[in-house]
Length: 562
Image 1 (spheres, one colour):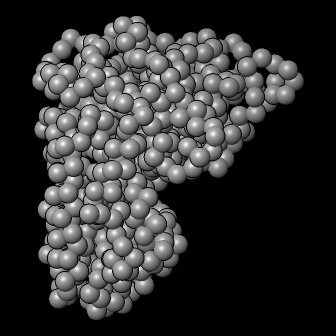
Image 2 (cartoon, rainbow, N blue to C red):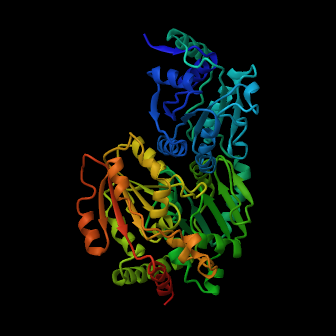
Image 3 (tube, helix red, strand yellow):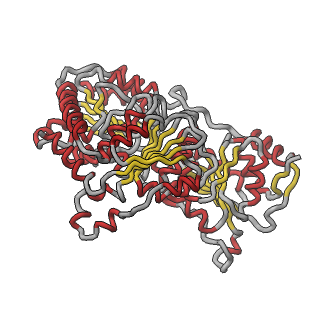
């Protein structure tokens, strides 16, 4: 018969996770968290996963939660182990990803008395957490319930801090956990599955005044940021595009597509003269989804503010362009399902004019790409079309996501990137977690600095064989040669982090198949069978010219102006 921990708090937490259907438990080793490790490991309801490095473990869990859209629990020992979760906690906070952090702690009388592996753990994530449950005060059952339901309902990170006294390894019979589960089930109301049917609709009379403004406006812009793939939203945006006064701008991470959408925003905007910038300004800006990658659209809409900026989202609205007037506190899908009944098309040349500009830019883009030298830009033009249909594409931050924004991406792909905080620190770990959570092939495209920074991500026993990584190695932080400032600072090496590292020995150590490409011919040859089935996951490291990439990219943008 299985044995469970004797600690009452451990039993209560494990039973609460089972009742709330928290399936994946990502554990980093330790001793103070032994009661929880023992209990979760014995439970048939939980899938326990062991990842040693806490920073990597947290991003790995984030990747699983990103794809399953369900909370994933993280479990660590006391002390600085907990602090290593913070980068992923911040990403989850800003990207609406549910994580449940469970940290073992010393009891209160051992804090700040010189005991080993001990820090002040209570409320340690205060600025970036939806709820903190500091247990041991008598109302533990309610605190745990509130924490778990907050993660589920509000889609974000919560923290449960659990003090344990020695001894830590005592066990009892399994029936006690089953009893606790029954007790909790009898007194818990599980959160409803979210759908349009149980969201609270908007007040029609209040919505009518916005519809009147909409119907009277001949220049309406809909800007879609990061969003999980959604067929209903795709259909609704296609319906919007039938209105000639509506221009839909999307990013690749929006996971929607249509010939009438502007999908490479920087490519369109970068060459604008001042009169074009003014003409591009909408009367109404309606924003949906999460973070926006394009710096150009941020500059444009901050400098040429629309008369009205509205945002539709059930949780939050960012005043990204410093002119937000109204937040519709419902999902975009529910908003459109009500709003469409009150709107009508408006005669306008707004959409047609800018779609024509899009085609002009695309022609210039194709002419330049076909003739440019081997570089980061050229590499993207080759690897993006090579990705098999229906794959998951995970993108690294910094220059990787920005290069990807310049190209059309196969509409069958699902595209993700850690844009909550836009950090490079856990991109590989997140991609591995996401690959673990889905059956589809997963490709992760990353830069060299990001890849080496998160190299402990490869220290993971759950990497599927259909996982692929492309490392674009330009010798260290190539984006700092393009943005203004670093080259004139006299300290470029501290921004750019030049190096001569390769992924070869990491691949050997972690059992990845390793390949390289240094020119267009080698790249074509490697891509020919890179995605084929294999007994090992694969890394393709593509070396590009460090001192030429920025000049080629600048020439690309200048060519768009001609």
